[in-house]
Image: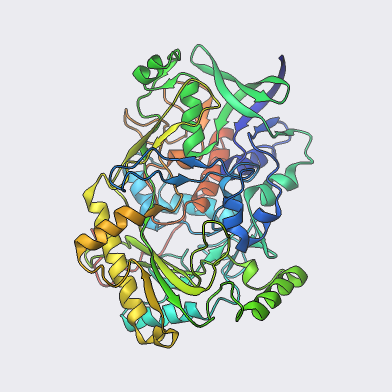
Length: 554
């Protein structure tokens, strides 16, 4: 096959959330040339565009790499689905569109753990830079001039208010802005949606930049290796239809392929644990044992309720007239339930009063779960999925072979830390109290899972091991830090290699307390300044987080 060669100042590998944002931002400098490589296609799809079609988008082989974990011994030997987006936009093509930044303390913990420059007051300006918040901007916490549209759920299902009323009756408070100074309590979610369509960094940043002469976007181009000359990264080799491609970088190469593909590409390039690479016949260029390690994700264990009425979203004869109206409303005006993400509200709570911040997210869903062969819920019901926000279990990603086309071995090692069970059991019990409150009495709903017969901690532990799933937030496989086990330094540079950085969810020092996509956008925004040597925006002067009850103080 013929080998083509091209040369640019910057080569960005991976056209997902971080890559689209970073390539677009770097190309704002007209004096630099930028090339973005994406293994998938354009990402253009009706399934990705319609917010409520997210299950259909996840099931699309054109949009999802469809990774699976190795069997998980503490989860009944199950292989866990690990969906990762394929195409320009990356995992934002198939995710729940939730715009949530995490708790402010998460970023202060990053800085304290060896990532100076990444405290909350230092990263907040980067969150604001990308954001156009319809409801809360401009303000200290929100932007209104950024390219990415964010809005609160519109016209939520009335069952969301039953969820709020039930929590209120149990003593929990309302949080009007879950991305404000203290994201604790219940509230409607903020979503990355514009005009009734899914918003990604591809739609918001990359597509408007495609007309720039200094930006080249190559789709259906799968990177296979980073080429090193000495300790300097100089090029990326890739497979394309009809041949191979070598893209050279005059200045830097930046990996933005995500928590699965970035460490995989590093190892294929000889950067990783030397023993592992040698066993596969890959020449070792930089011995970095941390590559692929520290993998972790959020685990959820749902409580599902079934009801006879048709108040929830769902497909039934009784709901057919309403559903037809919703379809017409979306087709004509891009409004209604199809313009939202189904998971319309959430609550962040502490499983113990002495904790500094919430460690459980309760995701409320005014619908039953879709069946395996039909992408919409049949019948009616609702659910709460408790999510453990700060798991201590750590896993590892390794290569199955030296073939770039082979999926890596993904072992999140879920529940290897026994204490990860506690917040999930707490969440199930709290969900049951919520559904038993008077606010839900009129629904006449019955618990379909775990089922009323499962009451003891042992029963619930067995249920979690049999039914829990991850919520698709893998992080930390190229962990950022200042110690010898870190893969990248606080400037996102690969340790021991010149002109090579990583800027995606793989660099998280640890997982944040919620959905990860907004934080990945922030990382891309900050990476642009680091790469170009630009001074960061002044750190924000923030009011103290409300700790009037003392519970969140160290």
